[in-house]
Length: 266
Length: 350
Image 1 (cartoon, helix red, strand yellow):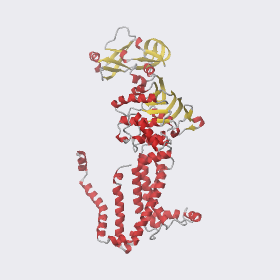
Image 2 (tube, one colour):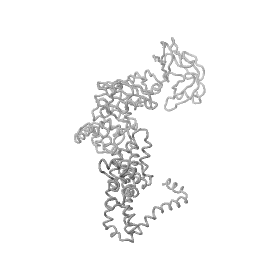
Image 3 (cartoon, chains in turn green, cyan):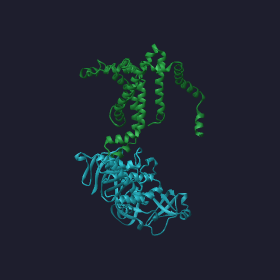
Image 4 (cartoon, helix red, strand yellow):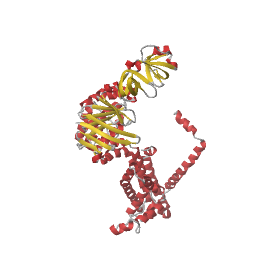
């Protein structure tokens, strides 16, 4: 306890004051949202069919994007954590790119790849008659693009922290590499897997820029909750605020559920 | 039935050359300092690191043969390992840890757990099956690791420092039970350790490994009587010299020389027990043939006998009693006369 007090005393007052300003920057908008929402008819706003549709679509798209991220991101994280090859740094940079890329730019880039005249898109259209832009699968693709890095980074860090000698031990006991992965590696990184998937889901749920650019804003098809919020602010500000509150509560719930995981690595 | 391993392997700065034969039913301990390549040797035999050049054959089954491009994967080798800090799976209880290998080798869940329970009972932990590894004591974890390795009924059992992770008391308790378990295991037993006590308590034959090379092999008695490296001499606690024999003299490095009854010829080792080294403050007169002056460079005063390390052309350790040290004021350092009787020097070919 003495050590803790000493450390507390060592923080200059100025730093505490600035920290308070920083915290207020986060807190005030939330308070504002709650304050405005308290003055609106929450039930009416949530009860509207448009809100229902957007909420439902958001859940489906974000969960699908999370599923895609897990399926594609797991092997990617594995390769990045364990394989030794030239260009690994480049691959890791590529995986992280969507985190720093403006989502709108991501959406444009997706169009150039999967759009009707895109690199892969035109071929998809010709060969299978599949076109992704302005469709629900397109929204899922856009969300996956933006959210998957959170899963990959979390899982990669966890894989690096696993004592690989435990995996060696499993092999000497007769486990094939896939069995080792399933029965040793995955259980060892389970907390990080869950944390990564939850972060990824939260990011997908809030995705706006890439989705609206690549998938458009069609109610029932690609108009997810963040898009509905943006639209509602023009026509029905109260509904926009209530929908924002829904997003806020969902994100906060994820953070609270993860609070033990985010503080400590793995 | 036996293990025949002859191979070369380089990992980082380690260059491991090995030529080893171990018969089933006997335990061989590879003894060596840290960094000698002991763990790498075990990992190579388990198939976890590929060898660069050579062959590993177990019971006429080729596990590795670089000339024929044969490398059997770890999971396909009849080899089990007890790892240094046991490496129990932290997410499985003791019973499932032991059952793990059986499940991987095709046993049904029920059957695997049934047999795992038997193995736990055999190592005296029949009532700890439900315990998670973090709840086990060091000694219990060691026994679970042993049961887990033996449960798959390997032909070759490898043990990496099986007792060194334990405290002194537990180590002494477990040494006996481990020896019994090893003696009951019908396959080939190979353990590596840096602890000579552990090696001698568990194995009938020792192989001394230094810097990736086997420097000596034999029974514990053979090795302690005729050490062939500074490391072994240090473990045994004797002074070891290497030189060229000529008649009754051995020429050491520099201009130094030892006189012995009969040195033979060629390169030889000479061993002098510290008890046989006498120290004097004035030039001694008498029968000892080897007399020289040397500075005192270090004192080890732990215990009733005092070890005094002398420097100079023939660095040597002398063992004296406390009264002798006080009478000669040896604790003040300075130069002393060293004498060794020729008949106290054991000489054997290098």
